Length: 502
Image 1 (cartoon, rainbow, N blue to C red):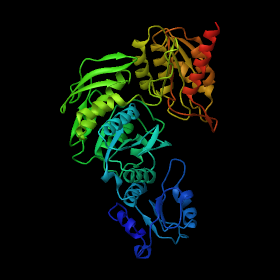
Image 2: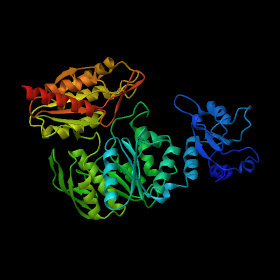
Image 3: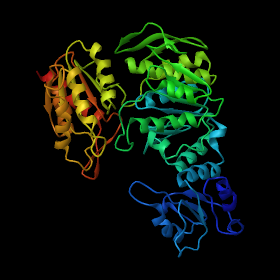
């Protein structure tokens, strides 16, 4: 592909303008598309994006010095620039379309399932992937925990990468023999048009609750970003929608082909009688494709929703019922999602979970509450430099549904962790909440986890919430190695040694 061939992709775009005769001079091999001047190289097309903190046009000279063949931006070039400069109304959309064209539209060569929503995206993606795998379809995976390309796994840097990285991974999936790709699609990615240029075979909506209001202007703006996934769906692609969510009707109206799932409201895909235990879920699903038996090691009502969503998507895409049932049986769990880290040798149950919003924390606690024969001890914090409005709400939920609450640090980032803890604790104040939980604080997260495991009595459940699969902690501009699961294991080892010595 030449640079000129690639740039012809932009001609139908609003606001398109190009120097006279520029394409004739660009019949040279194209080596890539980038928005990062640090990755720019000879023969590439550089797309200058306006970011939240900086304007990419300021880095265009750096990209030009690196040898890029052309620049694409939403503003005209400065007078000093003589490299071909192409103007479009929306540079982010241009980046997505150019990346898809450069990588030969890999999404058209696989069944791509996009999953969006506040909670449940990761677990639902693992479930759908397991069903495809059980059907003999090699499946790529992109999300919060990992990127999987065939048999190769990479640590995820963000839930949904920027368009060039996204398309490059999909291209690699096709070459690795993947017949499907299951991806989490974040609200940031949808708002910033990273997913434009992808042909989705199906879209899934899990739910919408308060989150990311440091980025979105409000809940309506947040929902509008989620809705874009369904606006991107081809007419024949099913939109799988949680009927129990108040926003469901708005999404059904967007979809040409909608499939609903739910527990409380009438839906196309629904469960029979449910039974809950720490060993997993057993129930039957009624669907347009037939009855499906669920035997899963996943725990709790939120995972019923995740299973329903995954079953609806997989069945609508033609995955046989036998493979769906086998995929459900095979999936042992999802990293950092109600992950039980204690063993049969322990007299307490310790669970690590990614819950980092008030709604996710409520779901976690409501899952654990009926499974606790004695006390529920909850360790959690709130992230710094993020939506502050959810902090007291998290404190209120934890204090209402726990017996003991230990508020600690999460990723304080540039904020004072003590101040964050105080904001969380306001919601746990006895005057503003229901419930009689004992509320404690401990700034050091490791000490908080150790303290919770030490104070637990036989048959208590200790929930460690907020970071889940993450292997780091962001404090004061530094990223430090930290793993809730590792710390919990060490604390349990110390508890067993103390018990043996006693």
